Length: 547
Image (tube, rainbow, N blue to C red; front, side, top):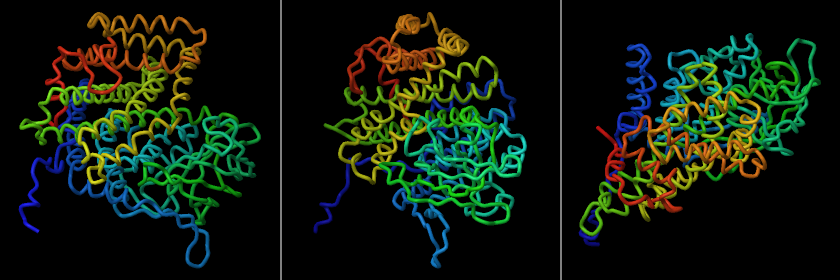
């Protein structure tokens, strides 16, 4: 065949060897903004860590790890060659490399470092762009610290290993490992989010705080982990327990993995069903207070869902902009075509709004004040509902920017699209988040006050934001039948909050376009329908990889 037929032209070069952190203006500005009051040495340390992590995330090596981890999903080994029950999950080497890099970068260590939640959330945002599936055990391990602190003795034993920067694969007694991972097993067959309907039974032993568990968990996150937080029915009611995979004497705790879930996306990560049959467990917190014990952990993982979705959105946007920069149509760069510019600008607005909101929530976790805690109580379910809902349509639109190339696996966009719904489903789906926000509105007036004060900081800066704020206030004043319109109310809360943050902190062209389209109603139903007269070129230029 003639060589001339194989000449390749008008194709975007591989997006590799780029700065995932330093090249993201919205992210770097958010980190710098929330670090403004930190000590100079802390600011320098955080910037250096994130820059290094960003270079690693954009490297050819990390991209290869992500591809190999998804092309070789985990395999369940229930028995060894002799018939002994082992219940282990095998992963490819690439998975361990990804997970090891995440742990080594401190992505399970937010609790004891200055600005720990901010730097950890930004790192999670950056590293998840290399591969999102391994973020599940990272998130669970990070969040487990809050639940274990209900028992100071357990926290003293486990927290140093959960926040360790050392990843050690394989099941061994925790005392022999420098670092451990945690999973979670809450959901049962008879009820999803209604954990109070759980039937797994916990029978107390003679030793204080020790129990034996019997039951089946329909969904066990990260089943290869060293320990798990589990809800079960004790004599005093629904209670939280710590279940180690390996007991101190080296014996395997009964933990029968029945199967791994065959998921649509999140293919690199294992999720399974597990059977407890005389499984040793240690109580965490008081009997009958299981939901209260894990609620902090759930809030932390929900925030990770927001960060994870914002990360997926940024990676999809990056791929779309990169393609448009290097593709020509009718003799001109695709990125300069008016209609494509409209689409990319719309995607950029969605991405920046999600990024700014996610980092604002992380910074609130670091503040630790009563005001910020009240703000988080309402803002987390609001953000979790909206940002995770926006992820899938945005990633789908970014894929379409690449045309047929985007529909091909080698582009990486199909993997992002399959991954995109997961954060909306995990840790409570859309209805759960909307109803949780309503509970906060009804029961915790300080949460609403904190939310309104946050939005109020931007009042007077944009007439469309002010009008949306007034409409929202009217909605919140009328609680009659609000449950049936909870999604509508929470959506409006999210948009007003995002608009307020962008008006305060984003460049004027970004804030103007967001308020015109999302709050002023001047857009269509699809991406790429922004109104005429906005500075869309500046919005797209901001979304490009800088540096």
